[in-house]
Amino acid sequence: MGTDSTAYDIVLVLHILAVIFGFGPLVLSGLYDVVSAKRGRRQAAAVGEVQYAVAKTAEKVVYLVFVFGVALVLMSDGAWSMGDLWISLSMLTYVLAIGLSHGMLMPNERRLNAVKAELAALEDANTRATPEQEGRLAALTKRSAAVGTVLDLMLVFIVYLMVFKPGM
Image 1 (cartoon, rainbow, N blue to C red):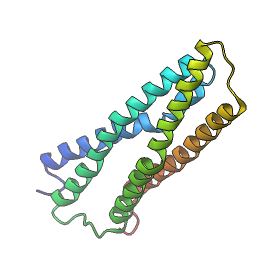
Image 2: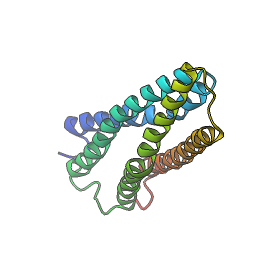
Image 3: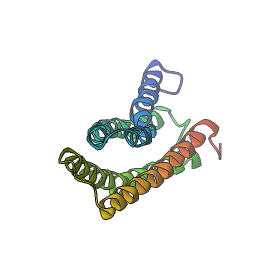
């Protein structure tokens, strides 16, 4: 087939679209917490639920990035190889990022949403949150921000590898 075929170009377009629609919402997800923190507890809880639902959908599209990327290598008729430094580093970083997302970020987001719901219920009952609850909210928010930043940097690294193709 080769890199100059229409089929290759179609898969490349699908790969790029999967990157945009998969990673775009995830990169911006930190804004949800920033914006919702300026609202009441009930709104923050609702925004957290929406953010989590968007992330779960985007996550499925992110899997297509890998599938289309592998397809591009296989369709390249030897122009690219899984052994190329930029491809193998991209794949390794991608797998590590998926592991970090599944192992740390998403479980933390579930816990964060549970605390937000708990605080929203207190607000509805005109009851103040305890310092422990406020502390859990702050710690979980900080952890999400830290892991999210690491994931964003991993994505930047992968984009760097894709554009500059070190080792070629």
